[in-house]
Amino acid sequence: MCSIEEGDLADLRAREEAQHLKAQALSDTGPTLCQKCRSAPAVLLLRVNDIYCRDCFVAAFTHKFRSTLGKSRLLRPDEPALVAFSGGVASSVLARLVSDGASQTDSKRLRLRPSLLMVDESAVVPEQDVKEVERLAGTYRVPVYRAKLEAVMGASGAHVVERVNCKLKEESTGDDGGTESLQAPPEAASCDSVSSEATVLPDEARLAELRAQLQQLWSAAGSGTAREQLLERLRSELLARAALQLGIRLLLLADTETRLAVSLLSGLAGGRGAHAHQQTALADRRHGERLLVLRPLRELSSKQVALFAHHCRVQYVPGVGPDTMAPASASIGRATEEFVLGLQASFPATVSTVYRTGTKLSAVGAMTEDCALCRLPLDTSGGAASALQATRFSQMVSSSGPDRFQYDHHSADTAAGDARATVLPPAAGNGSCGTDTPRCVESGGGCCGGGGEGCGSAQTVSRKPSREELLERLCYGCQLVMKDMKEVDNMPSFVTEEVAARTRRENMRKEIQDFLIEDS
Image 1 (cartoon, rainbow, N blue to C red):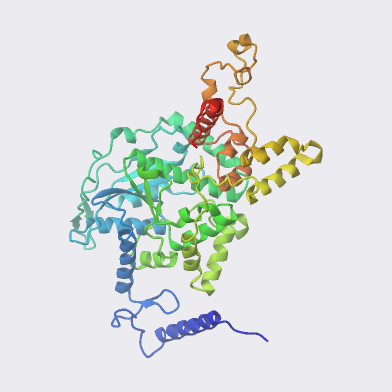
Image 2: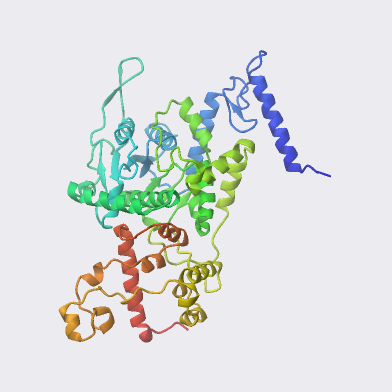
């Protein structure tokens, strides 16, 4: 015989109560009152039986946002903060909350000096209305900066950000046809507070080269999942680099509870389980003490954000991206989003349960190195007997075939416990520049990597890492993205520079290993 669990009964009662409240709100006997103030008529229904009037909802929404920032105890008085602004609903709501809070004069003033940073992604997303996003950003009473996505492909020290509105508007038209003064926050009326060197971008010719390199990298990503993940990582790196160049320690992202829940499940499906905590935490410290990434909307759902934008008349630009209007089969992210939102429609606690579960997850063991692409801890050193190495070993045997596979070639590394050497052997040449210069020929050793005497040329430093060297310095999730790419010759400079530097340090350590004194 069938049975009904206690949780099922609770869901049934919640649905019946929600239907009863909806029927009351639409009945002829009068509107349902707000459950908080019990005086004003309710105008919106949040979850099951949460019905509010407009004023109570806006007050509760604002309080949730401010309490999320306040209880973290990570903010310093009058500290500059950079808000990532895409023009969408969530980022527009975040910009409204921050700018309104910073412009208050009483004790409730949000003690931040906000600025907006918009990312121009038109190189890979031609549908993005950059002009409209820039116009919308200019309506706020804060400084606005712009960074082009192709700039992240350049060298690590290259400038990527420029100021858009050096002079804020002194007046704006009010509702009555008159004018009202816009009091800008402190140090927000000019470009003097930001170093002029931080706003000097590469010339147009260089930007065109970087744009072509980015488009080639984008074309090499064969699947929709790889493109979504690649865009997310490049955008994250660009935002962090822009904040560091502007000398701003706080970076605010408009990630909602719904978006974090979808990102968590899609990340687990994409091999990023070790980074579940960092992807859902309030404070992301992947860049160390120099930069603190905060998610002040992480306890607010996308529905709450949309309702706030509607009732407070927040202007926004419809968001576009690689997954816009795409079917669920286009990528793992779209399939996960449709799955989560479908469950949320029937079970209102789905998003919050998934999100709060993700905040409690953490990786086992210390991970000292970071991924060269996403800057999160490197999770590929689990040992020779780990499930990750078993999967890779199976892939290696399947790709090489029984004729070319030799177990003895990897048995020594496996016995030593070197998991990475078993699957990712070092590139041929051991740091060679790949050319036979006259000095190499005279030394009798051929190329500098094999003769024991380097040619000393700059090619030894500027040589692009091989595919194996790149994979060795990436986390498992980024490795899956790389495997979907047809070629890796157009990887960003910050990745190749980091991989080359780590490879040189590892080779140097191997050379002096016999002279090192081990700690007892």
